[in-house]
Image (cartoon, rainbow, N blue to C red; front, side, top):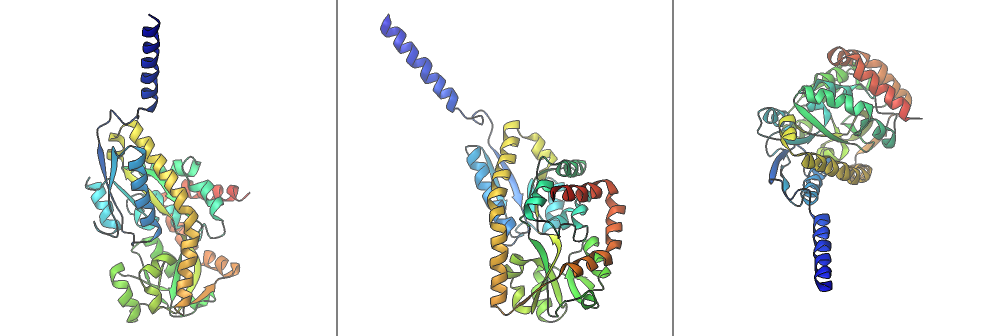
Length: 341
C-alpha cells in the first residue's frame, strides 16, 4: 500500500510538472504571417523585421511563423499597402510617410520638425504602446482596417544630402530635391523654397549623378546603403522627419488569431524594437562616418535655422491639421512637451 501511494505521488508530481511546462500554443493550429517591406538590406527596418520574425517563431515554439519578404521583393511601400488591403500581405514595417496614404492620422508624424528638439528617450514616452498618443493613433489604424503593433525609433532622422551647401534659409531656394510623393513632403520643401521632384527610389542614384536633381532626403544609413553619398557633396542635418518605423498588421489577420498569438506578436515586437533601438544611433553614426570618409562634408544646422524652417513651413502644418484634425496633432505636441520634463 505504501509503495502504491509513493508511485501515485510520483505520477501526480510528473503530471504537474508536465502541465507547468506545457506551452500555451500546444493546442493551437500553426499559422504563417506574410510580412513585407520596402526597406533596403541592412537598414534599420530590415534588421527589425528579420529579428521580429525569428523572435516570434521562438516565442510560439514555431507555431506562429513569419514569411518575410524584404527589400521591395513584393513591391514598394505603396504597393505593399495595396496588397494588404487586398488581403495578400498580412503585416509590414514602414516609415510613416507612405503609411499616411492609407491611415490619415499617420500624417501627424509629418508636422514639420516636430521631433527635432527632443531626445530618443523623451520621444519613446510618447510613441510607444501604452501611451495616450499611441492608443489614439491606433484608433486611426483600426478605422482604416489595420492594427498598430509597435513603433521603432532611436532619435535619428531623415536628413538631406545635397551638391550645394545649406547654411541659411535662403540657401534652400531653387534647390531641386527629390522627395516622396507625399503631399506633406512636397508642401514642406516648397515652403522652404525648394523645387521638390518625386522620383522613383530605384532611379534616384542616376538622377543625382546626372544632375536631374541636386539633393535628396533619406535616413543616413539608407543614403549609404544606396550609394547616394558617392554622388553628393554635403550632408545637411535638417532633422526634418523622425526616422521611425511602424509595425502593423491587417485587422482581419490580427483579429483572426488566438489571443495567445496576439500577445506573442506584441511581445516579440516590444522585445526586438528595444534590441534594435540600442543600435540605431550607432548605425546612423557609422553611416555618417562612411559618408565623411567618402568626402562628404557634414553641416549641422544651428537651432536658429531650425526655428526659421519651422516658421517657413507653417502652411504645411495647417495642411496636415486640415486633413487629419487638430486633436491628434495637439496630443502629439502636448505629449512631447510633457515628456521633456
